[in-house]
Image 1 (cartoon, rainbow, N blue to C red):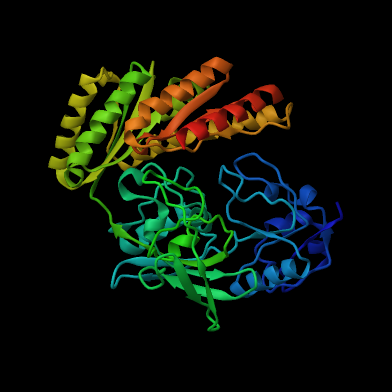
Image 2 (tube, one colour):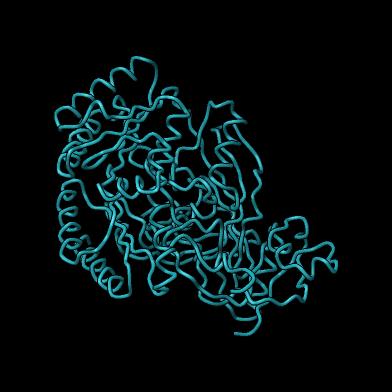
Amino acid sequence: MQDAVVFVYAKRLDDDTRRHSRFIRNSGAIMSGMREAGIHYRVEHDFPDYLRDESRRIGWAESISFPASVTEVRECLAYARSRKEPATVQGARTGITAGAVPEGGHVLNLSRMQKILSFARTPSPSVVVQPGLSLEELRTAVREETGGKWFFPPDPTETSASVGGMIACNASGARSFFYGPFRRYVTGLRIMLFDGSTLLIRRGVDRAHNRNFEIKTDSGSTLGGLLPSYRIPAVKNASGYYVQDEMDLIDLFVGAEGTLGVVYEAELRLILNPPVQFGLLACLPSEKSALALVRQVREQARMRPAQSGLVAMEFFDHGALELVGADSTAVELGVPACAGAAVYFEFHGDGQDFLENRVSELGQSLEQNGADLDNAWLAASDQEMGRLKAFRHAVPEAVNRIVGERKKTAPEITKLGTDLAVPDDHLEEIMALYREGLERLGLEHVIFGHIGDNHVHVNILPRNADEYEKGRKLYHEWTRAAV
């Protein structure tokens, strides 16, 4: 590979800057106002972190840039066009599907575009941000600006994920059971196409007519076409472009993985923050009893969704619990030791009566399904809720750590993780299918995730190339069966 060009955005390029690639990579102060500095590095040597994401897949690229403004984004895209190279848009690289991993061409990293541009309280509360802002930074800003009165509901596991990345994959998380995915809270987008033209798309304003669409660019030209004819399934879904008859065209870009344009500004809807929020982690004697509990609690919640306040249900199999416990994370967090499986429930509502009624009702369901009531963990304070969420996050972190270690001796392997959701009446069937395949092939694994949406993640942990290939084939078996 030829030496790759690294764009350095600099008001001043002194000799020290030219000598130290580490300073160039980590410093924001020297990056403003684009020019190609004539400094040549090999991206894989000097910027290796930007060739991978949390999927642990490693890509390659000819050049990389870190724009901090709309003008710089346009100039970076012009550079890629001039060389007839594709551009891979990156945020925080926290994704697990390799969406930010380049396969040649130019890497457009938006991590420096992290400003909060404005807040609005009328006609409805919203915030306008740049794509490099993290979820944690967004939550903190909203809390400080509104005094905790409003909040942003989407709850992906990784709080360092960027807004642009979450838009790209239509992130969901545990609370999507009640609050829905990220797209539900995106009300406006400013987008730059690969040719440098820009669009402003607003929810409720720009719509398709049947499957035909037209979008005006900021320069006044019109883009139009025909949306694909396939139908989106009724279950939770993130595959392909989102299309519907008469759809809001903003939803075409949410979940498109950056393939249709670069989001450089987003308006996000906020909602009232429920005054009472609590979580409970319950230990069950077996996976079968855990699934029965999930079905019972979910059916009760769907009979009266407004009153139940159930916003999340998360599942952890015995392997996931053992994995976290093995590196002392569970001990540090005070997580109870569970012999079989565990289910996490989260409720949002109003007042002390709500809290007491929900705990009482949930306690009855737990008892009926053989849960260990003495070993349940009830979290009602922000600190306790934070510990529960840290436990949830510890599972994929432990998986990534193990895969990273094993890649040192078997570089061809990656994490194999499912991302399949099925209708309610197929939950037990898909879980049995997972178990049968894993036991038949003897593959090390953990199962955890959003069981409220029947959307659990099976993470296969291959030890070598042979197990990796077996896992890949099994993954395809499951995908065909689910579809």
